[in-house]
Length: 455
Image (cartoon, rainbow, N blue to C red; front, side, top):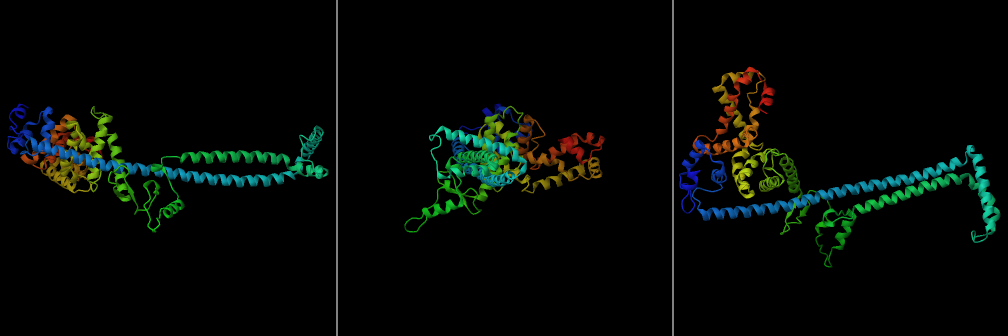
């Protein structure tokens, strides 16, 4: 630490040591934790050894501007993705609404069937006694009302003589019809409430949730034609949510109104889902990763993925960003160093071919240096493919070690590239196998056993 503070830099901020001497000191002696943020900026080539204070400040400003620019771009795209998600929800609600209307149509047909059944019931002889009683009660009621006066019965016609016949014919059906009317009224009121409910659902923000049916779109297109026959462009809130693959969306948050294809939106949406899933479970038991710092981690990952969509997000990338963020506690420095780190680590992910090389080299090392272990692996299901080392190489042993050890191992791997070997990770993996070789041999472990053991 004294060397770093008092003898490492010139007056203008350049490193006074030869780069090879710098790497040698890191490789053999390690780095004091308090100066790791400054040392790692050189180890991961964020700064160059001949950069003075002016050059470093300029580089920091440029990197911060670039980070903010990329972040503003993916935030605009994220806004479109969220908008599309809301439109999909609105479309699903519209579908449910149409289904409920179909159900109400079925209910009205049920009303007709009830009415037809009531007519049949009226002719049933089982109800003759009750109908006669009901008929006589109606007769008495009419006679009482006739005695009251014309105020209660203002409409008197010459057809009063036929009332008895009409009453006798209709009394057979009066009671079922009363029941039917009550059912119809209840069904009608329920349908009206349902329709009101669904209408209220769709009173939302048009720029986000408005869904315009195809017929309305055609009419809008016609209405947007000017007098010269040239069609004007529909605003974004009139776009259909489920457009074809060739349609494009305008970013509501972008100052330049950039256009993004549906394929790009789908791809970024998929990556966002993966990032959100991984960020929430990244080192939840470590003190640093509270809600605020998890948001920083998400910002860094989304920025990297947007700038490297051809790579995308792969499970495990959060594990590589996390130690960097703990050291720097700054999004821009972490993003810059992660990009540098991924120039080496990206080939370990499925799109690269470095993992097969690691497995082959590991097989050769074990076969030459420890024939007993190799023979055991060959006999017990032949797991000399060394797939159990996959996580080691993918994450530089991040999940196998505590954070303090991860820092030390990582900086040694970075310095070893210049001092000893660019494949230093192989010797760390070999050391892990050799450290536990006696346990592996004594328990005669097969592939499943060794996977469980190292996990």
